[in-house]
Amino acid sequence: MDNKYVAKKGESLYLIARSQGMDVRSMAMANPGIQNVFDDLENQEVVFPEAVCPNGFLYTIQAGDTFFLLAQRFNTTVEAIQQANPAADPNNLRIGQVICIPQAGPPACSGFLYTIQAGDTFFLLAQRFGTTVEAIQQANPGVNPNNLQIGQVICIPQAAPPVCSGFLYTIQAGDTFFLLAQRFGTTVEAIQQANPGVNPNNLQIGQVICIPQAAPPVCSGFLYTIQAGDTFFLLAQRFGTTVNAIQQANPGVNPDNLQIGQTICIPA
Image (cartoon, rainbow, N blue to C red; front, side, top):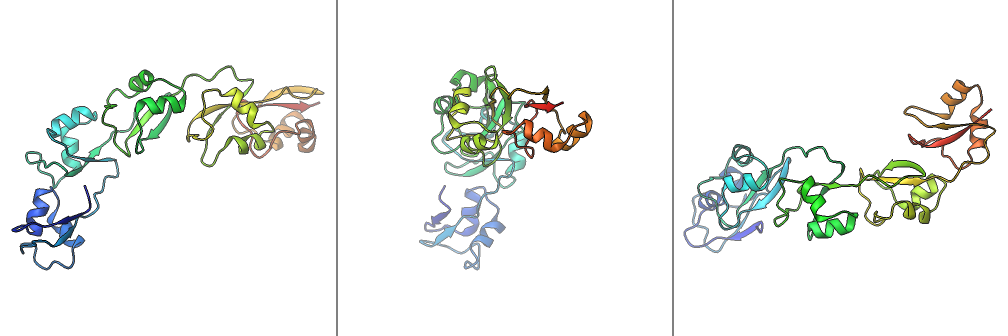
């Protein structure tokens, strides 16, 4: 729904608010130049207040919609929709009326969460993220693939990564294959080869990829797998060596960004 509306003969701010399921006070605040909410506003432009929906997404009422059908379609309840839209009359929904569809916390997702954007379809998402339409449908049983809504959060399932001759890494804000290659002493090509189903131009926060790791140099000591909380300083203390010696034995490793599962050399 456009946030502006030209009133017809006989329409007042009060009647427009009621017809759109909106709070009259909110309408009055959005139109401070209108002094009386009962005045005839013929041919005057009215501004609708911005709808607020912090725990879900906005939906535009279509022909045949009811709170019951919407609750079934979007895996919620009639009561939850009513609570999210206290000014809307469920018995008098209007085509073009914008309401809030509350969305419960997503189920456990063996992949990563994705927010629907304009133009998205399950088919396009499956192609983009190297999965299938069927897998996305199974991961989102309450989502109607024929009526995806901008702002709706779904689960993109991710198959178990291939055998990873390195370590698994969870994508964070700002990550690119180029930056990851620099950080972990590898190349963009090597990361691409280790993740054939991943689109490097559309990495998603929470997505798990494989960071390939070249075989460590000849290690005059023993190989060690990084665990939670490890630092070169703590490892040096634990194994009776020095931070400098560990750095020299692992020239391609960034000591400020050790990853769980990463293999390094502990010099004797």
